[in-house]
Image (cartoon, rainbow, N blue to C red; front, top):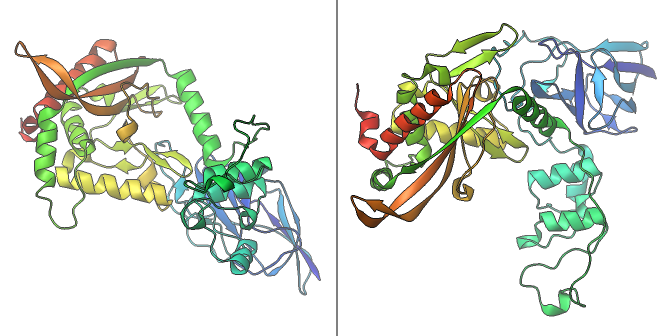
Length: 437
């Protein structure tokens, strides 16, 4: 037998270490060449690491959340024949699931190396391991969300042992909480009274410890840095979107076959593209290393999107050159790609201003955090019918608040307010969004 040492590969872009997000093999497993062994993450991207050889796993370095330096021993195999070998794999291709913050210059893809290289993650939730495949074969298909599967994997919990109380036996978040706490599974909604816990109210005990790793760690770090380093100027304004809602409904009633329905976001981004021509300081980055403000001519709108792995910001590039329908289609395309984990690095980097919306959960006001190195972020709150005074009479209008934050180092409060007022004017008279001039 031969001892084969595989070292943490150089993942490029000056990376000196990488975080173990998940192992898909364990000591004693016999794996084949090119089988995915682990998911690792740098500050730039998540990458799947395939096995360089066929053999038995003798040892693994680190667990989920641990950092391993480039060139350090990662996996040791036993293989058939030959002399003992130590290998550090070449740099991988750019990953497809980078962390949700823009970078100034995405790295080009390196040439294909002859040895197997870590591959981009096709989706943020790790591919199932051989052990999970065996589990599925024994107990049938396990119905659970990607977030639940990841949480169970991180906790070392076998989902086959968890009772699912959801429709068709689907494992809900409450089921997972109960299993992790060692409590009996909660009764399914609408279950007979005999299946429900008796004795009235009961105290809940225990705690859950969830290690902050992977994408969530990167989000936490970057949000903290943005809030600590950027003095946020917040500005909230209400917008009468009655006419905009009427136009939206009219256009959606005449949708071409297969076209994406119009939400408020395409109108907002189209209006932003117009307004930012007069307020270029809001469509900019601050390059802290060079101490330079970079004002962009094109509008690359980030669309904050909630995914099973946390918040990501896919980018609608050159919004100023897209029609309303093209904006709607592109927003849907990049958002769907981010949710499914199929967005490329280019689709998740390079935004110059971000729009965030909680949809029906939008509330009255929010305080969005700037997506560094950008200068501004616009938050869309819930649109509701409210009584207002119009032309001296009380009437019902559809009102929506815009909650915005600006980098007060480089965007004065007056300019921030003026930009939002110009945006409000376009949204309240939506035909003017499309009039050249």
